[in-house]
Amino acid sequence: MGDKLNTYRRAAELGRENRLWPLYGAGFDNLGQDGRPITVEVPTYGPDELLVRHDACGICFSDIKVINAGEEHPRIFRDMKKEPVVLGHEVTLTVVGVGENLRDQYKIGQRFIVQAEIYVNGVNLAYGYMLQGGMSQYSVIDDRVLKGDDGNYLLPVQPETGYAESALAEPWACVIATYNQTYRTGLKRGGFTWLIGTPDSRDDYFFSAGMDEQNHPARLALTHVPEVFAARLREQAARWQIEVIEIPLDRLKLEDDRLRHEPGGLFLDPLPPAFDDIIVLGPDPNLIEAVAPHLAHFGIIAIVTDTPLPRPVQVDIGQVHYHRSLYIGGAGPDIAGVYSRQPVRSELKAGGKTWLVGAGGPMGHMHVQRTLQMDNPPTTLLCTALTWHRLGTIEHEFGARAVAKNIDFICLSADAEDYQERLAEVAGEGFDDIIVLAPSVAAVADASNYLAQGGMMNVFAGLKRGTMVTLDLNLVCQRGIRIIGHSGSTIADLRLMLDQVESGRLSPNHTVAAVGSLEAARAGYYAVRDATFPGKIVIFPHIKEFPLTPLAELKDKLPTVYAKLKDGREWTLEAEQEFLELMLP
Image (tube, rainbow, N blue to C red; front, side):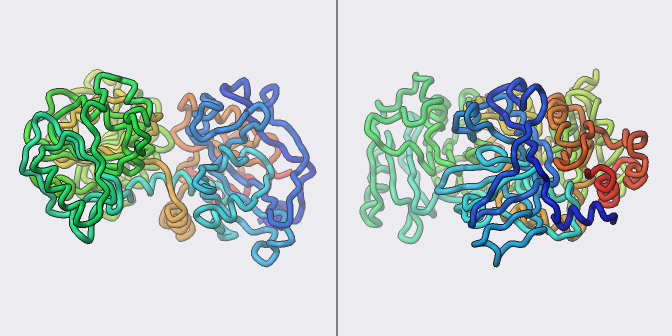
């Protein structure tokens, strides 16, 4: 390691200016000034604050959503013209200044990554959204990060860990987390349950679990429930001091489509609109669509029916993804059995059949790599994308690994003439797991029809709340499939991912596709928007100006760096060290 990089790692010198990319509103025209980052003074910091240097920052498609939406983005709630957003939540940083009250806890030169989902008093102040992100050279860390709702959102990084690999621990944590989701298999204890009858309801419903002295909701709402069953519920509620609320059927304006988009519009009285469990007693799509917006985060809609639903249902797939809502179903009369009969399995089925929809992008790259590194992987892995443009890279990079693990690895482009025939052939009786990486309503709706009995579909790509997908919920009620969604991570997920990186069990460096300086960030955002690269773009804010460069082109631009890539295409710690030694000012 050269003197220049050693000096940088020790944080012995502080820059004289702070370059950053402000976003003043929606659209690329509002990114920076005259298409360039701006230069301001290095920020000052107080006695309870840290001055940090951003060392590397990955670009995420979520950044493009902020650029497109501006102040309409759900995580932005301020006047961006007065207080512009600085993007960048996939970031690794070094402490370069310590407030006097923190000197017993932090030292100059310490390295950290950030759990971006920062909450303060229940409010999301995500890094790179409400808090200044990694597309800046320097920033100040205060109590919002150091003493948030979940404690300290900084996670320490070992000195020898690479900058790119530590920055990319954040998106990798999102991949790991999607396979570690858990869902309830019964009513929420102490929660709010709503039971709603239909013309097909029966009198002999009962709860074999979840409605007893030890386990029961705190509140119970009843609407048009068959009187014999309702009487039993009221008796149990009186015995265990459960509050019972009667909601007359005429308060459900089923013909009013606004109910699907205006939470809180359901009740005439000021009752809480968020229920932990909504149980529909019969196959009524209109009713399901009307009550779904009133489901709490992590809530469950249980459809208890012996007969098929007469039509598909409009499902808010953004609610499934962002609120972790779950639809379950099955025949009665035991309602608890509908919950417990088919538990959610978020991990890929060992020895099963998996389909990655939209696998050509950076996140698809990670899902493929993660699948092939499983101890007990599926035996078939199908990767599809709209065109062959990036699938060829996936096939080239991972084909040999799949063969070595006896996995039938198939890459199939949707623009191929025989796509539908090949898809049906691979699907056979259906896929055990389908991961939807493409933010497409059509992809979600189409993929659901290829699930096997008891199969799981995970909508990883975030479609905004209010995005409706037409789904046949008879698949849920009669075939036991489960549709889930998630792409966020917790501190525990990020800590687990960082441990895997630093122990050598998983390499985010394999995902790096292109690198550049801070000035190249704008080109990087365009590249992510246009799906130019199959892997991740990493920006190094403190190097000399260097254009966005695919790794293969380093052969001509920086041959000594290229020589240290693995197999001429994979970023390595040695390549990064050479790159920084050459490019740091």
